[in-house]
Every structure is written in C-alpha cells, then in structure tokens.
Image 1 (cartoon, one colour):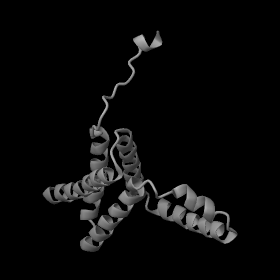
Image 2 (cartoon, one colour):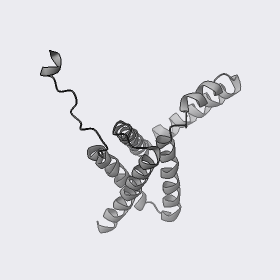
Image 3 (cartoon, helix red, strand yellow):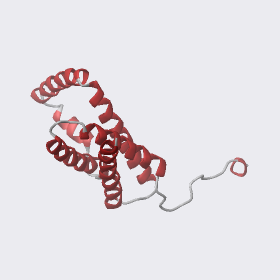
Image 4 (cartoon, helix red, strand yellow):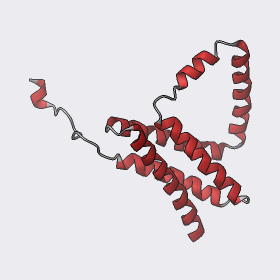
Length: 151
C-alpha cells in the first residue's frame, strides 16, 4: 500500500554523472588554482599541487586504501600514538596560522569525498571514478589559473 504512494527510486538505474557535485569540486579546485597563481614561486607551487591532487585522488578513489586499518593498527603502539598527538598539536597551530589555506583544503576534501560517494552510488568503477576525479580536479586548477590571468 505504501509503495503505491511513494516512488521507489528517484534515480534511474545506470551510470549518471553527478553534475552538481562535480561542479562543486571543479569550483573548489578553481579557487585553489586562483590562489596558487598569485604565489611568488609559481612552478614549485603548481608541481606540489598537481602531485597532491594525484595522491588525494588515489586515496579517495581506491577502495583498498583502508584509512581505518592504518589508524587502528598504529594506535596500538604508545610511540605511534604519542607521535600522532605531537603531529596533531603541530598541525593545529599551522591550521590556525594559515586558516585561509586550510579552509580551501577542507572544501576540496569534502567536495572530493562527496563526488566519490555519488560516483559509487551511480555504479562507476574504480578506474572510471579515478579518471573523473582526476580530470575534474586538474581542469579546476587550470580554470582557476586561467581566470586569475584574465583578471
């Protein structure tokens, strides 16, 4: 009886790109690209950004990269737990010092996680998700650089 009233699924079966979340990811990387274009040491910043985009995309796209395993096995050791706490304390001071950069990074990581969830829900494979995330990220960085050069 309830199934007659409520629709079973809003989304049609098959692979549909999550355009809204991809646009969010593209704009987050475009903002980062605009910021990077203003830095004095441009080439080093871009090389680091491109390599970091590649690593972040691998972490989000690859299902075998188990973050929980790394944390649970590492936190069994007192030395590792102390090192994590010391590094976390140092990172908190860096975050507070460079809050404007940290907010850009959080927006990018959140958008990338959201796109990955949407791609997984739309039945995209690991390689397809990796390609979509990588292309969107690099196009966003390039778009930010291009917009900064126009302005």
